[in-house]
Length: 91
Image 1 (cartoon, rainbow, N blue to C red):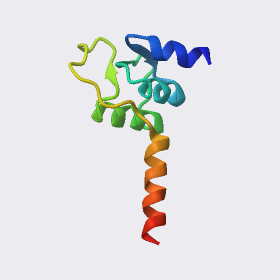
Image 2: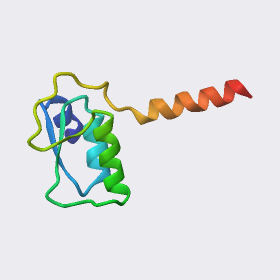
Image 3: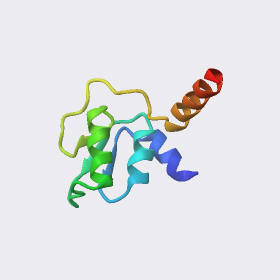
Image 4: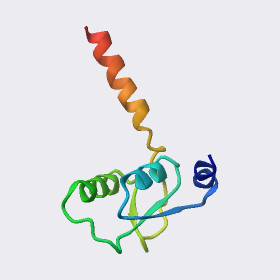
């Protein structure tokens, strides 16, 4: 829909810290994604998601420098499908 079209045409995306789906969809856009930490997510699941996406290079704190390179667009469906194919071929 329109939301995905906006993500696809953006130069960069700023997300808030309160939504896992917004963060994940933005990271799937292939654009630089900056996290506004105005709401502290702490050590819970959401904080863990943010930390992992930062480690992988998909997410940067708001105000961080523009990335020189970007990781490939995050595509968890393809990763899951590949894992399932691997399990099926091992059987």
